Length: 451
Ligand SMILES: Cc1cc2nc3c(=O)[nH]c(=O)nc-3n(C[C@H](O)[C@H](O)[C@H](O)COP(=O)(O)OP(=O)(O)OC[C@H]3O[C@@H](n4cnc5c(N)ncnc54)[C@H](O)[C@@H]3O)c2cc1C
Image (cartoon, rainbow, N blue to C red; front, side, top):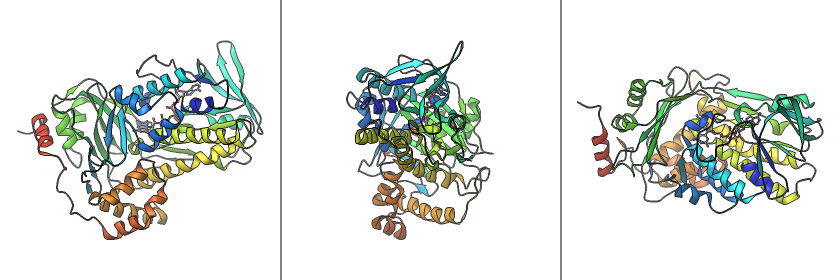
């Protein structure tokens, strides 16, 4: 839908093909299995959406529908591998927390109301054209196949995209692919927000990639409808279970029991849902020369990332914004448009890939990558930066800018950040979560694990 919004600014007829029935409201759907799991929208992704989705602020519409805005400066309690992050008086970047169903519906409703884009239920099965130019899409029908002509085709079919096969079928070969798989399993359960805990901060216990053990993490996200979405995740050998008792035990056994204590007294509204679609997969489409005219792939069709880092939607949105910018700059039929978009979109993919793979490479069960010298050097730097960020607002801001995809990784090499990394944290490490007295009382009241 973001690509459709981008295209609508430059062309008359935009057709979105989806094999799924797209619901007429904020509902989960089969074609988006990951939608049952936590979907935090980072500030950089939201900014890109604001620029391309027509009809007024997406943020405001999401907030009006109950989404929660989390200022990273004080609205989050987080245990990192380098200790608890302090909370500050300043907001910092904000991320949005709501169900994926609400986000998708809000974007889809805006795009369909304010552009001439139309949605057709159809299963795309390949490309029409040749290695020089894509001329349309092949679509499966009850009687076989039909072709839909198009001047520009965007593959936004997600993690399961068959883009490499489709390109090969029209004569474009040699696409390099890479998979780095930590074997992460995500387990998610939704609870009713306990009375009195409506303003409790988003709580995260991060996984530790550096302990030579499987990574185990957990988080409690406030979402619309006065609910908490609780997501646990473990890499190969440390996977969370799908039974409710095991779910709670896993949360309590994390490096801090805070997530487990919070949910031990909360009322579950769903069972536990598992996802294993979590590997980092990259298709280096931007390296293919010559690249066919008339074809672009965006979002998960190009690269997927371990979802623990919350980057996929933002990368997809940044790709769509780049498409909009290129269309504005050169128009839809300019030669080389598709190649420029594919290469430009690779920049945010590169940054997200480096962040995800740079950590996943350390888990003992990870397949597809081993830490090399460059990983070791980058890791020494990023661990020192995280340690500094736990006790320095300026260092924390640098880290947030990059994890929020508001800035590229070069932001971490600014002289003031280098200085923070050298000097370390200004304040001493915290011995426990930075909760206010009122928040501690909420935890105590909810905790059913003691005594
Ligand atoms: C467990 C989990 C948690 C995640 N958490 C986060 C998070 O916190 N933050 C974040 O930013 N990202 C997160 N992600 C990543 C995020 O889900 C993806 O990056 C994002 O959905 C990519 O968008 P997309 O449009 O490329 O693909 P998708 O959102 O997967 O959409 C693909 C669409 O294509 C349709 N389709 C597929 N094949 C065809 C076909 N052949 N013909 C027609 N239609 C087709 C599907 O029905 C679907 O509508 C998470 C992912 C997982 C697995």
